[in-house]
Length: 192
Image 1 (spheres, rainbow, N blue to C red):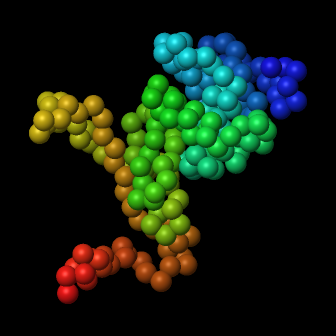
Image 2: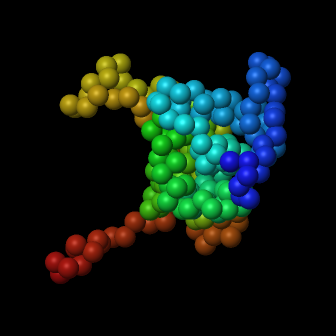
């Protein structure tokens, strides 16, 4: 791989806590280091190779806190790996979700967003601009029922996502509360 013109030699970064080596091409940070260690372990457990594509995509995601879409990550990663395709980014993200290194966040938008932080935390989505942030400073009690079997389902996890308007949208918005829902639906209109 070192002979490829698209390959950039990684820097070695040492974790101050455990003194292990991590491969990072951008700013070294402890979260990114531990995500690379988590990737190596998850790949080993699942019999998958640790590829430069998986490393670059996870590194790009771990370095962001804006919960990017696959397309946004593609635009960032292709600067490092010039031959990478959009399809590869989508497939790698799905693999990272499947092995538990990344979480996929569903929003009201049609596109999925991704988060390298897989710890239990909640999100807030701006209805104006689509900004998605981690919800900080709000404590939500445990919502998981005492028994994992509910209504014929076996529950494993849950997510909480709040919607609202960010400060920028509030400053520029014509409304300061949730937009009103339509009084009639397209089905109602067809019947009349």
